Image (cartoon, one colour):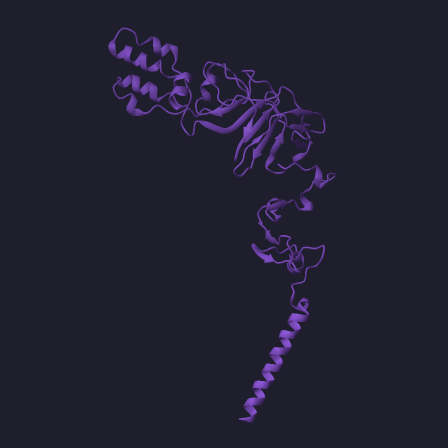
Length: 321
């Protein structure tokens, strides 16, 4: 019995001592703050940054907000590596181009990228600068942005968003969203307009000589729409792949019969205007691709450094070849 009482008294003394030190000196129980440094840099080396996040409270307690730190690392893309503090993305130092400071980077840094830039060995092929937007849930107006090479610079102009068959579509600022591509060519537009491509735009290639050519991916004519026509007429229509218009020579052979007249009437509906009216309001009518012709070559054919700047003169991206 006496030994039991001694054990109880010993436990009371140990627990009491622990409580006393906790109340009088809470510092010994705190997580080290590493003033001026990120605690994760002490725990995890830069070469190992696990996909995790945890909460580091502030001591002593104060009205100021605590911070939530998270590291993310993707081995397939170092440019995706970033430190997030309170929801704001901080660009790592190694991503800042040589000769620039963090303050010279655009809020859109790496959101619109120069995916490629090159000149062609063929005299008839234009030089190209290709941009790509990796936006997430937002849009950006890039008209007025500047592209500089070591030789000269250009300003991104306006373009026609929805080109109508009338040809009177006005040019407007280029508003890009996620996964949009902007292809810039050194030659001149056959229409004297810059364009956003759409499902029917390839029909313009019949009357204009674009360089490079417009995509020939116009919607095919459904078989169900032509079953009432003669076999010859159906076969000809089905042979019109892509954005091909009916040939006048075939059209003229159809005179003098009811079957021929019916075929001619249908052939009259195959055009840019008819395609536009039929598909204009479809969710997939507009392409993600914009084409811009600047009628000047700013690229060095051998090596160059291309820089993209926003309207405030801040760097958006850099491409070196």
